[in-house]
Amino acid sequence: MWSNWPINWKTLKTKLVLFTALIGIFLTMTGFSSPNIKDNSNLLERETSKLILAKNDRYFQTSEQPQIIVKTVNRTDHLTPAKLNKYKRTVFIVVGTKNKKRNVQIYSSKDLHSAFSADVRGNIIRSQSDKLRSTNKKKFNEGLRFVFRACATTIDQRYQYSLDKYDLTSDERAQLSHPHRLALPIALALALLIGGLIYFFKNNLNLKKEK
Image (cartoon, rainbow, N blue to C red; front, top):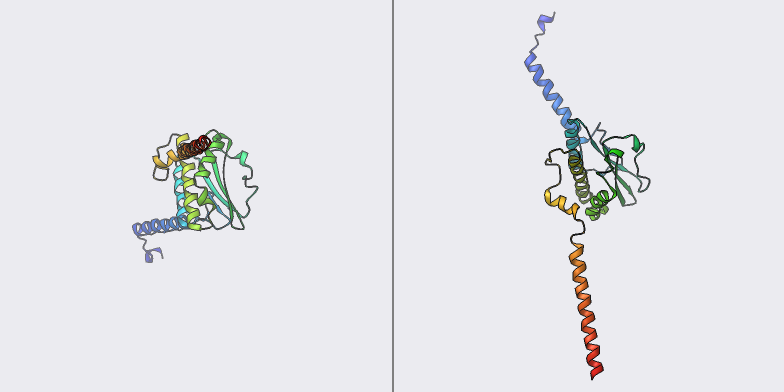
């Protein structure tokens, strides 16, 4: 009976490989069955989902296996992930949205608190505040991808991983290291301007008194 059904094992193996690859591509493109993406508000673009999956896949191949979970919810308060204290080597990026308002927060497990201090988390969020508040989906996702890459870079530095194409560039990292670098020159310029105006008006008053 089986002689009537010859099996070409080489062809079968090739087809299985192709089938597996197609399934992998489908899952990557859609973000299905990924514990790292919980897009309840349907905010994530395909490019954003691909970035999240690709970077977490690299983490899965390390001995520490850290992870970054991106979650969107239909509220702007009470964003702290449930059972956060039970997680290890995990960072959450939680996006709250309601009535066109957005609230993006970064949370980390206890073992990453030193790497993700309040200042670090605040600098990351503030660096993209305009985009993260935007109701334009494309612009918002640009900001969210930057936040994700910043978190990934912080994790890579924490575990001394080699930086890759998913991490921030040196210029982008400098922005986070010196978030107020533009504020100081502006403040100095304003101080000089105010000082000049005071000097000008003071001299004018003295001239009027002399007359």
